[in-house]
Length: 74
Image 1 (cartoon, rainbow, N blue to C red):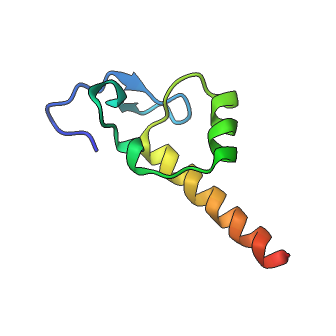
Image 2: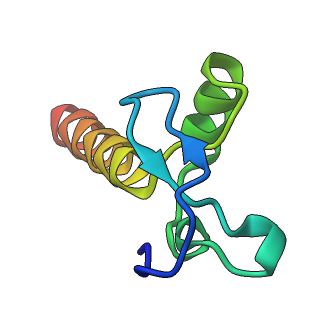
């Protein structure tokens, strides 16, 4: 989450929103997300820069819903 003192120096390539990636500062919001290996690989192929936490959470939820649907169909 961005605090008021953080500089929003990054732009999400998916939604265009400004955000601050703090990976270089030892802890970024995305560190608290658990993304599947397949989703991480797909994101790495599609994007060359970090995505904002809102997009990552949305993509994670979509991937989880798809996995649940596929498991239910099996």
